[in-house]
Image 1: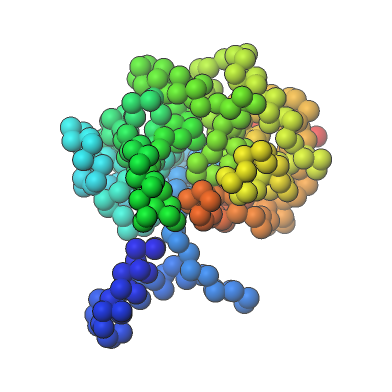
Image 2: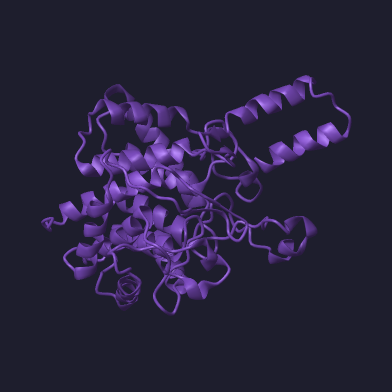
Length: 370
């Protein structure tokens, strides 16, 4: 969104008439990003249809929706139509692999990201797609081939690029708002482990990723969350990724992460964390409870064999007690991260599909609801 807006400002400063076709087209496009209600008018920095569709499908399937349900089949067909088959800037460091993957937005056919490309196959696999099954299989194979080739030298995955880690670029004046780097992160790496756990194989990539995650773990047991706020996101979803590839919940480093989650549960049974943790990591794991962050913590605890524990039961109680009549949860806080210390995002569906996923996983552990 920023380059879009700045480009229009630059054209206007150069004397272009507001009625010029380029400016008119740019302004018309921005209209689709404006969200207005009775009290506010907001310009959204981005929309997330691929991401939200994939996670919604994963949560619905986990909740018991049939693999042949119309909603999931329609979602799968739409996702297959959004696959990116064109090369992009990632080819600079990765010329030998063919395109294959998904991006965050509606209209993006150049910049796939590893996060979406890791989650979409999980939404597609196991569905009864009939004649579309061969298309699905080929798309998943292309996505895996591309994603595996994007693994960085340190064993982790970044969002968009491979080995984009030249820190001197952070000192360039144009980087005062956001870093031009794309570092590896535990959360993206964990999502890759989840899909690799589903398809099996790829042992060397998995081993390197586990070693990366172990190096990235904080002394207190938590993991940093690059694309979600913050250590609750990083820790909960990393534990889920580790379980997917068979890591034992008895491992001391996993038990350390469980202890961290347990020790940061709020009195109301939920979990919460503020965006301030990116500026001050000593605040990690503290903040008012939210539905999405509570769900992330629960996903991590369940993945670590703690579904019957006191913390998990209290967390489930928080979700049940705070659910609205329409089935969703209220969430006023921002729990998504755009650029740490720069801007943050509120995904309105996080407060629904992540709690649904956590509740479904809890049920599947054969632990009865109170």
